[in-house]
Image 1: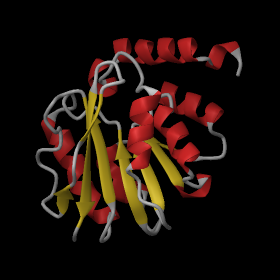
Image 2: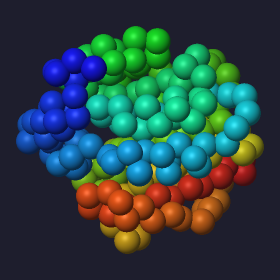
Image 3: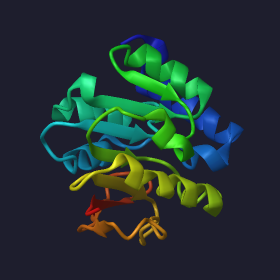
Length: 190
């Protein structure tokens, strides 16, 4: 790994993006490997796409690939151009869409079965009307059994307003993250 892509450099780039746009980035540091592995472990095995929302510098992406998600099945959706450039350098084998999660149905039209949506979006800092638009997109790309995974640094879920067709699973706490994180899992029963 080159010096420019090491953990310290990645943390600096992530923090710089946070300082540039804290509402969109939502955290000062990228997710820990412990949080990333916990989120990846919640993705069900089997066929279908795994959509990652807000991959940032890619810690969850790495964990998804390490868990065995095929690169052909993994689609990243990132809004920040600087992060997109970094992701395209680090993961040239992946499809990376520079776009807004509030337009998921349009971006993913006719892509086929989605087995999981893994989100690192900072839902507590994004304006509520935009979160509502993102949540409205989810049923249109989901099918029976699609899993939605979201983390938050708050002790309560950040998924209020998620369509009722998504039923809550058991949350997980990841204490080995700075700050500690809660991971929520919801299963689509449409």
